[in-house]
Image 1 (cartoon, helix red, strand yellow):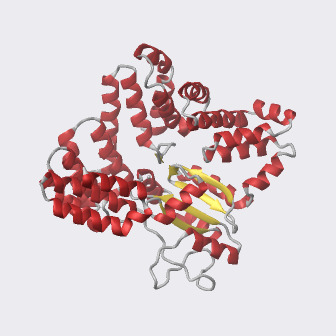
Image 2: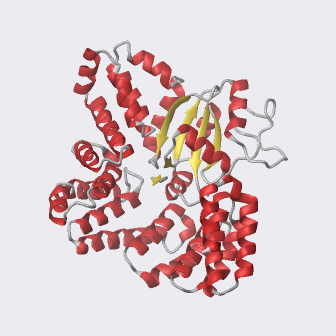
Length: 442
């Protein structure tokens, strides 16, 4: 799961009304990307929910979902039940809706009713046997969060848990706990005794602590959550614990983290690095394990898990990075994290050749060459990336091109690259635009 602090192929525009056939989106000649607003208009006419698929070209988990889950008869059935719109996190419309819906992870699948009220969401990559039951349940109930709250307040502990889950999925810890505090005391007591609702409360406490940047509270809450059976969420919560404890004295931190090693290793051995993994996000599990090993002062163990992941991933790819983009991108990160520099550089060039129609690999390799002090070598790759980049991506590519051109004392060209990118994309992405302006004037 890629956190936002993650090959979008946006659907073409709808001809609203008669050209929208029983679920499947029909393209028109305009080729304009379908927006969430377009989908909601269609929803109001058809009284069908909208499924917003938030994704991005750099989202490795999105690659997994596209190739392994969002296909086949089950996906076709979803497209008949709901109007599906792919929202690119790097586009102005995608960013607007991510902020509005507080979608902080990619991929996120958010179901809206015809009025734009959220009915539920599924976050992160998941095997299809876990993804579809969750999504089908949301599509079947048709309950917005407000209506679910009303049901919960009548005394259903199960519905209380569902409301808490919804707040946890949105990372709205304070809001969820504040709502829970409004429930009658007997219902609160019943929820605390229920394993599902109790875990959700602990997850909300962790989210609230993260919002407050309270490391002590993050550590306490993360330890409570990690002590429970949290399945595929374990690497993410462990990352929170690692981050929050980073500034503790080394000996104190090792003592704090030592208890996490065995459950994480058991998780990796039984659910991740196996022939048929039950948890889809291999990358987070591998990196979290290596990071934990390093924090515990065991670099040999960190190397071992990375080498194991590299070997397994190469076996599955069979020398064909275009066969599975999620695995191919995982291998890139494992090689980089393991410090296998020559292999990493050669593999980046393989990825550029395997995926010539998007900007991301040419951009990453070009940026790495700029950082390595090789601006002349970087420019052809960055120019290749610029031809494919869009939205916020175009500003990021322009930033690296400006760095390379300035290093080569080609300042007039650098100014033209920056001006062109700022004119077309700057107004939509002020933060990235300011970074580009600052680099140009530095």
